[in-house]
Image (spheres, helix red, strand yellow):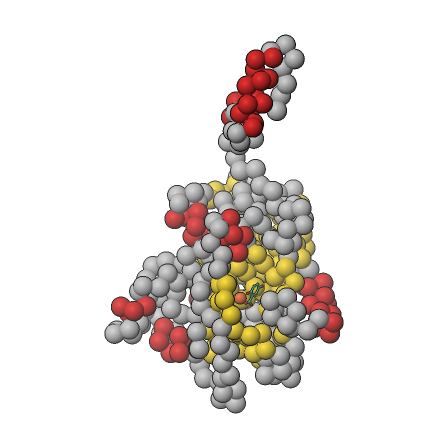
Length: 349
Ligand code: GTQ
Ligand code: FE2
């Protein structure tokens, strides 16, 4: 609070309001800024470091220590040590050794898994077993029970993204443990969700929709890499550009896969440079295939498969593909969209 040696009445007034927890707007600045002032900074976590350090945790730390999950959170260097990749999103790598189980629980923050490499793990979502493989996107929406099993002989690692900081800011975090289920591991079936909603483009079952429409998230809990890959190839075959992008959507209605998280996959062909863009909200990006460079504001980061990077709100973003590169992106865009706060612009070169 400013002091006014020559105005004792004003000083007395400031002391009085302070005592009753009031503050004068006329003494404040930096609240209504012309453009977003963003605390999180651009950063890339390298695949090699994520893999080696997660594998070391696999040797050193049992899975039951810390919430039954062996997870390394990506802590944005701009956030003073908070375990969040931005003010709104949590991103982490999770490592599950051969034969290990991460037991069932559920929470109000929504989550997704994106598999950057390997297979052998299955997740059980409200009783429905979903095998996970390279390039697959698996949804764990708010309040859905989930547990991870690795019956294979190899460890496996994947990317987790949650809307945890956003739900925490809204003071709406709930958590409870759940009953663990043992699926028949010898004949792991295709998930029930895929049988109902992943059978063919434009086909949804009649009869069960009245129940599912009450859910806020996609009834299809897994999006397979083979389908995403084919969709990107088909777009590029049309020949109108050096890149293609698809959005993962709820097959039962026109909306994002979850109310808080948008998911997209982009393919930029070898040698191409994208236009520069910026948008409100956080983007968490993971390189599935290929190599290149991303420019984030005035910083450049080289990219190889398995790298994860964050594009903070309103930060300029541009990609250069050294080889054809596939980048998975998830963002909090559905929230900004719902509130009329989503802005996206191309930035002239
Ligand atoms: O796999 O259930 O990265 O509950 C953070 C919290 C993963 C999970 C995370 C979680 C999980
Ligand atoms: Fe969880």
